[in-house]
Length: 252
Image (tube, rainbow, N blue to C red; front, side, top):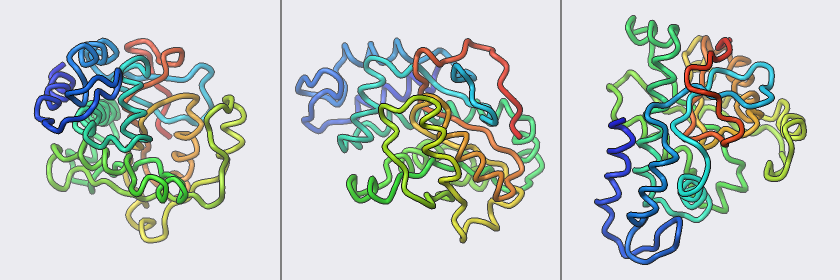
């Protein structure tokens, strides 16, 4: 698929003397062997994915690959190790997933064809503590880069969600614990409420695991009167990735 190959090809433009994000070898952001390994985790086309078990009210989710091996290493390095030089690779994959999510949702396609307002691409928010620790909002930057190639005015990146209370770190929590941890934890930011009202939205995140985060984010957008909510991620954990062509749940 051209979007994935062009994303990996963007690594050739990275000339800084850095270490490979996967194997730590000197010389490139991702060495040739790890680039090949990453490609093996990227599907030919983005596909609909569902967690197993699938939580109620999860919107349709599309992903570009499997969270494993070199792709998992690149996602972690980008988000947690400050490796923003990896953004072109991940943004290309996310762009493909967003495009597939829009293409797979008749309501979003109709909205774009009718010029009925832009599609909002809404990154799942980080906690204030995480933003302070990282010094930026990596998922928001990835979403902006991923949407750069879409037509002007058709797609707008909207940092429209915020945490309304503290939540525990999701790492190590099971599916039910994640659901309880995030229940009613998100809300639409006040200044974005008029924009979200009756809007078509694509939630974006880096990885689909149990689906708890996307369920809560979708609930918050629906509470803000969003008309349609679907989701796109860079990748999905291997044991949860649904087979190609699996029918996603309804978007409302």
